[in-house]
Image (cartoon, rainbow, N blue to C red; front, side):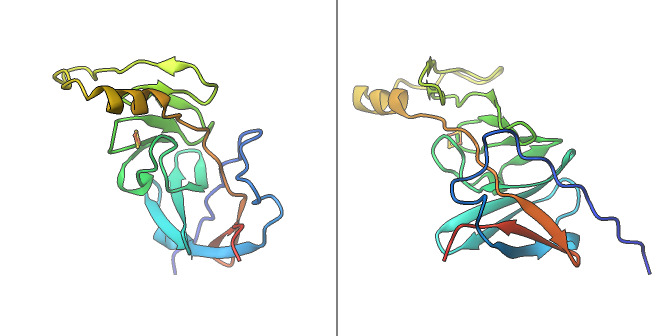
Length: 164
Ligand code: FES
């Protein structure tokens, strides 16, 4: 029988525990065997969708909602610790919770500073949106990532999930 190596858990960056998660009960998410290095999985509890990602720094549990406009990160890309969103090309560091590339359509960062539209290298310029749409985009805030404390018990990943 093959030896089972228990993968490390990525520490949660300071101040980025999801609201209500610090004292929530642990719930079973997924068997460790189902999330090999480089894998991402969505696990849902009611309307709370979680992303389990096996990064190069260990396993993380965060929201399966892009901090920009809530697209599912689980269908994006994972390169080391960097998750990429399919909708507007933002990338986030799952080890630090930081934004590495801001969404292409711009908007507010978590601190409220406006970040302009950006055109990725090699991409054609996008058509100008209507004034209303541009205004909505400019006021859309890319929030901070939030993480759920996790542990591994008997080969399964558990996390503190604040749902009834
Ligand atoms: S929803 Fe992810 S970058 Fe816009």
